[in-house]
Length: 317
Image 1: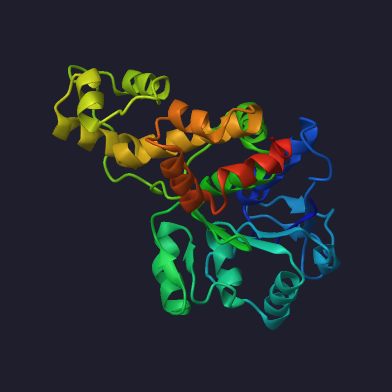
Image 2 (image 1 turned 180 degrees about the vertical axis):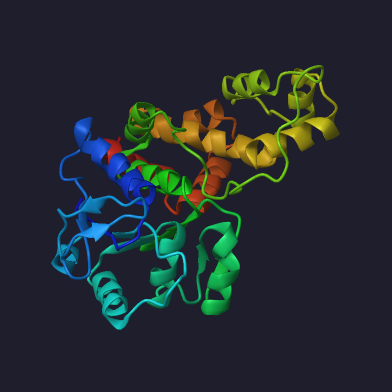
């Protein structure tokens, strides 16, 4: 997994270091080999970060040749247009089979290359209107954490880049590997790409209205149940309306979407770690039928449960 990471004068340390930490942890935890990112600049010369630190040990644009993943972790805050050299480099790399990721404002040079025309993209919510004006052919999403088209990925601002990088680890190495990386970095192991970037209102004081946290934990241990909103609200000791409101404030998702995501999370874990038949996994994770499970799984991950299993365990008879 050769990962080429673009850097420029004025990049913030966080944007650069966050993905270096996530991908570097793969090797440090002996989860896979060859995941050491290569930082490069347009001229191969060192840079000075926004914090005033100098980084000299960088490669030139030749680092992109043969890369499996080309990452733009950020972009200057004044959002200059990508120059012809970078635009052609992105297009050539993509044509050669390199996946391209634009994290936070890094979505701008990726969009400038034309790879996102006719597709959806996400960037920091505050700059989403700028991207929409700049590239009318791109459908700009101002709420999701990250969007993956398979060959091109974009993510929202700042910490969302960590979510996107963990998603890449999970996609290639499985949820157990991503969870191990997240555990060592002390971050959440998985946030869905379509989870809200931010929440307008703070979570209300839980005193006197039930313990939402314990209800979420209870739901995770009872995924084989129907888990209707009324049942969850009753467990939390709230009215349906109050529970739904507080749930959305706390998670950025509706109860139904959150439950479906957790069912699919557990299904992936079982596909990776067991040889259980698909029907048994469907029942255990609370899907009404194996058919319904396959339909939901394919809609979210663009692959069948059987194909997903084979990526991590090999064919199962």
